[in-house]
Length: 106
Image (cartoon, rainbow, N blue to C red; front, top):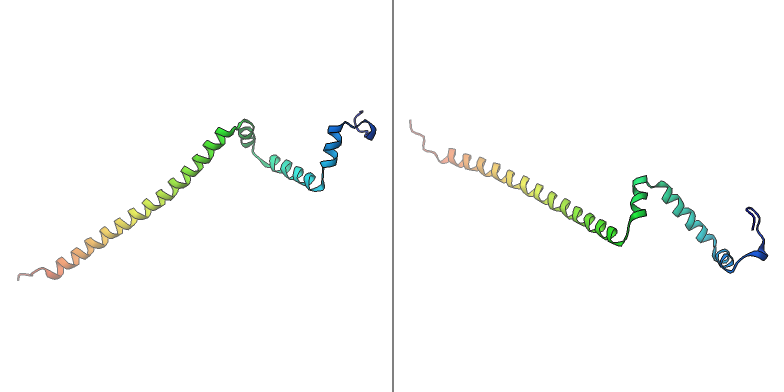
């Protein structure tokens, strides 16, 4: 079949199945995927071309680990700031009690 000419009598069964199954929704889906792929960075395209199930599983576990590490880091930061605040508050309270209960000798 020459390029640019469509002869319905020379269509193979595979080509006919393709054209019959090509609904407007499937065409829209193909355009959407093509647009999404075009928007990816070259690095992301290279990663996806070489990705297998093991790499994707490792990436998912790494993302989960980093999320957990971020939550733990925030918890430790808040805990450290609270402990420091308590330390400063208790030393000020100790100083105030010490000044109040100190016997002044004249």
